[in-house]
Length: 353
Ligand SMILES: Cc1cc2nc3c(=O)[nH]c(=O)nc-3n(C[C@H](O)[C@H](O)[C@H](O)COP(=O)(O)OP(=O)(O)OC[C@H]3O[C@@H](n4cnc5c(N)ncnc54)[C@H](O)[C@@H]3O)c2cc1C
Image (cartoon, rainbow, N blue to C red; front, side, top):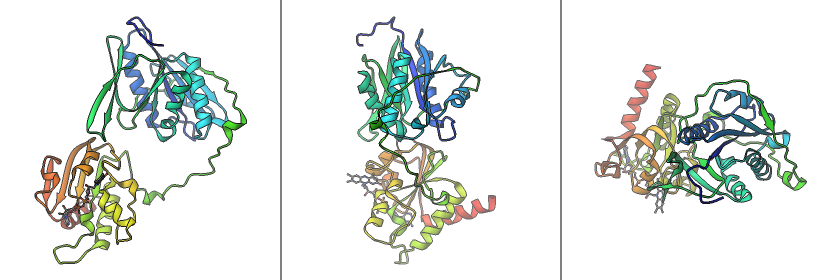
């Protein structure tokens, strides 16, 4: 469907799957916020929901006071687990049943791999990693970043349905309240071939080993300096490990790292055992969203700091007054020994607790 005119009425579908307990995740509420923003800005548009899961009634009721006027559901045990074939079939079916022209979903790992396929099945288009949506004069636009968060683009599309994957953490979660709603069930007939893949279990780090906390207010970044020879000519890796873990325990910060420090582990050198490539921030790592960031023992080179694009207030502790952080990458640079500073900070945090 192309060549939209100003009188065209969009049907905006918020697409979500339920969690194992039947609830909706925060990321789904963030996508709902984006969908509701579009709905509000587009006169005459409809906002509908498509929910997928074993049973979606509780999830639908949990957003019953939102501006959504119609709820569609694909339910059944076969739609509980993340599986491309069943997720794509269910998503395409609700989009069709709702006559959706715009589909908004959280770009979680589960949806991100399915959304482009859904757009293909429906003859539409998909955009991923969307960080903002807007509408003016009946025309929708979305924002996304390119070249590892160095450039921001604004796009519009005439093709429909337009499937929009919202980057988790880029939107506030919809605070809409609950209410009893009716869900129209959409039947999906699955061939056996759609159920060949089975999730046999989940492997995740123990709670105290889980250092990546997307919801934390603070990102705490460790650099290779923690493992380098210090003023006394010696390395102090066990002391570094204790300082960092104590800080994380007390601050509940999320742990990020420079590439150099993460790579050292792979090269068999003495490093911090709780770090993996998943902690890496930067051009070839992650670009997390936190209100504040504190970098320690890291030089602040461009391939690293480009991953700080969405960090609100940035501070760094480095011995080098000419490091990258001093060249406009940080709001505040403490030219100091991070061992001494973090030791003192830990002391103050312990006294406060
Ligand atoms: C294609 C490409 C992609 C890359 N992608 C990434 C990426 O995604 N993420 C990333 O991080 N890097 C990336 N890099 C590497 C990046 O350019 C840097 O090499 C890396 O970030 C350096 O890590 P670092 O600052 O921890 O280590 P170093 O450069 O070794 O810096 C250590 C710092 O610690 C300081 N220090 C030492 N002891 C102390 C102390 N006691 N107190 C305070 N400060 C101290 C030193 O003064 C120094 O500034 C990439 C590079 C390339 C070429």
